[in-house]
Length: 178
Image (tube, rainbow, N blue to C red):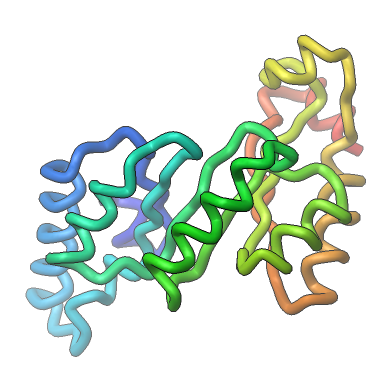
């Protein structure tokens, strides 16, 4: 609530139930009206609903009955998972005008593939290893800054975006990111 009312994008965790989402959306719509905004969606336009590969779309469908859904995030631990393509298509059919975020990517090729699937923004959740279970298990790391540069370049060539998040817990990770 606080992030959105201060102008930030807020992502609703994918396991949040309809009643909690509905309550938040109503509260934000009422605040917009109380503040005299012409658009009751002034704040709710900054809410991103998340869905995983195996999650039901029922909650998003229910929210759509009562509220405007502008941003959706298809969350996947690794965008190389073949099922992601089907999920992106399914969500795009449900929300053809929504701004769609999907990922997780670490290469420019995969960023390009996601954009070609209809994604507006490829997400990256990468780091130097201290909070990344995949990196810990595989001992494969990709520097954060290099990944952002590569993926952002690929996305921008197609008028798309990247969302880089996570990975920095302390000075060690900040230094290794470069």
